[in-house]
Image 1 (cartoon, one colour):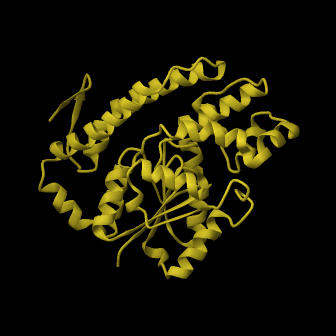
Image 2 (cartoon, helix red, strand yellow):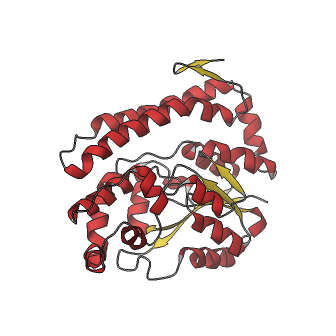
Image 3 (tube, rainbow, N blue to C red):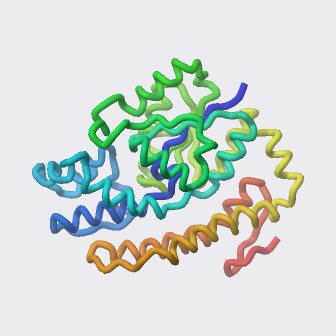
Length: 304
């Protein structure tokens, strides 16, 4: 039996928390509200996003303006920023290993199918995804079948077994879906909500990056052959390849990002730099942890 990996998209596979933050601040600034930082976003973020905006003080009339024309104000700003977002740490490796092992990888999302598929092609992982379960258009977003119901119907149609189905997400809703459908829930920090909110939902597992998903899958008897294949190579050699590939893409993206002159974006530009520094600082031990290899990091240099 092969496992089924059900991934949320935004904040889970796609590292777009800062794109959401910048979009939210642009909307707040439009209505003369004080902009927020990432900590505040993670304390308030909820879906549909109208719940987030209401908790940040937008009035009913202002929410109606944001919602007008299929939430064009949000989508037009967000999609431009998401087009520069990278995959989250370990995502590419997990998806490629799943494809090699014949496991199914499915995305279930509150986003919209076409822009999501565009991002999959842009990031070169479209062939790693078996199906995308998302809203059909801006007009139907949050108005048609819910995320959990869409997954339930898909599992029923394809005779998927809950006991070998893992759902990975960065919000409590994925844990709730897992509980309702009898799935194994894995919450990932660093997305759209705080770790405290994730833990309050009581997921089966909590991880900080997608490298840490692999030991969980191995504990259920999956991906054992790929582990042996990886261990035939030096862990530090594999780690170096993973790190250099993803860091290069990330630095290129950061360099190419034009400086912003809007009031709402000054803080967010600084936030992107801080985020880049954080991910660079933590990428080495995170990648090596997937191989259970000891590592010491001193002054940003790897010492074996």
